[in-house]
Image 1 (spheres, helix red, strand yellow):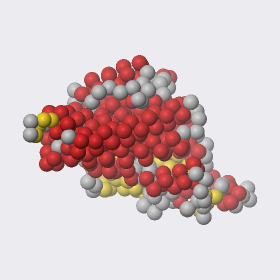
Image 2 (tube, rainbow, N blue to C red; image 1 turned 90 degrees about the horizontal axis):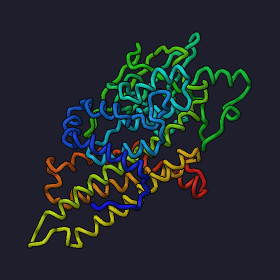
Image 3 (tube, rainbow, N blue to C red; image 1 turned 60 degrees about the vertical axis):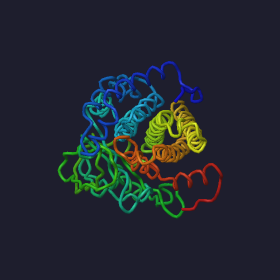
Image 4 (tube, rainbow, N blue to C red; image 1 turned 90 degrees about the vertical axis):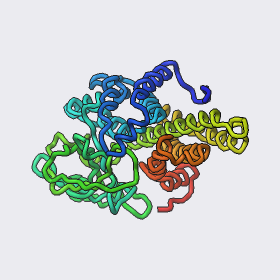
Length: 406
């Protein structure tokens, strides 16, 4: 494909993209698939991304980061994906967990965890989804009960990625102590927090829980995804944590977790956009090289026009992702842009990948062409980290001012 100036890119970002492309290009899609099919860590690539400063490019310099922005990390993640290695863990450990810790963690917590997240020597998983709560964080039942100066955590998390390779899990839990404080102060649920539809927002707290903690166990969820990370159900059976495990203030977790959800959506969009760029690059190369009846198949409008439509959708999605990152980095409300960016990118990547496979004909299903093995990952990004339906709910209510549907 030809280089485009539609998506604005500074000279610094262009250099960053080129450096990431050169590093990841030494590994390539074959390396990613080989690791993904074995559910084996892409250790070499991850270590190099960390050593080069790419994983922590957005984290504070005082804790081993590059002192850059979420826009910088988005470039890294998009280009890693565009080079054939869409690493879901880049969204989870540096983007979600790293951002929350940088903004709300204590000094000791930052020194303990951020440096390792930045250089790739530490991975942190993120546990918010539950079997009976789904996307409704206000109905979380995993609870942290006060125990001396610490807590004991009990509950179950669902579809938690990469627990087996993580050093710790950032856990979103109901705060038993915050709930008790509210009761002692005479504040009922309605006074203690705002209502959302028919439900009540219960006080939440965030904890960093080492994966080797007694009482923490996990079970693999067998899934069709071709990616290095397994998915897990995680069980917390009276897991004891000390006071140092609490992020920020007890009972203030909802506000804290939302500081990580916009980066989650923006960087998930970056993975999708990278898959789109990868797929379109494959498709256009094949359409230029593959000749039938004496001419490249790309000269036929039946091949060219669907690819052109895909390109337009991808350009729009990338623009929205860039705008969302810009708003987040400026400290402005990025929720609307982040949700729309994630929605647009996921939709565009599925269309681009499907069309690329169609251009390849039967070869689109052949693993050697490196397209079909990305299908379930691209499809997963339509559902997670936030489903298209929840994005549409958000836009309907927040952007259009329509009545709440839940």
